[in-house]
Length: 199
DNA sequence: CCCTGATTCGC
DNA sequence: GCGAATCAGG
Image 1 (cartoon, rainbow, N blue to C red):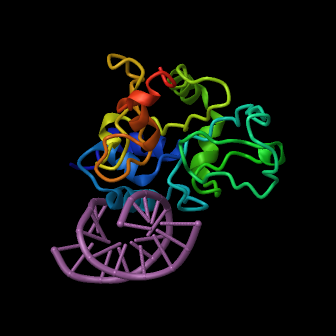
Image 2 (tube, rainbow, N blue to C red):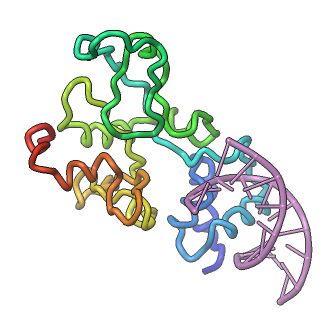
């Protein structure tokens, strides 16, 4: 593959949208992230202020009500640590309820910030993924990856209509050889005991 | 170990 | 100009 005008335009657009080099490479096809980065430099496109932070769908912090206070025996003061990056149910006590939900790394690169600017699409798709959960239950924010962006360690839980061009996959980290992230694995492989909990 | 971008340098 | 290898980092 070579850098045709079209591909360069697409590169500029995607880079401007804050996609990572590897994501852009996946989208363009036929190039590696190195090639993308190299091209970005040659084109003298704006460099990323901060690297890293594998990009997360940083949707507006949902109003997580401080539920379950009663469900929690008592004690459980502020020392209760929020689970870091765990998709499982997070019990949020009043003491920490105000804290922003930890989305893996706390650092936000230009990438994440950019996504915040135009969250429409993100929110819509994420919303669909949340239909089934009840109040007080925290659902992981999916990365909404396209098919080509999946690797063997990304969650392949489908989001939305496969026939729609907005069709995405969860894309969160899938442990081991699991096809799903921890959260979706629970839904996909429901133990009898949990079958009623999650529809 | 996963990922990120930055830089170098042979082609 | 191109991009793999390498570096530096979260």
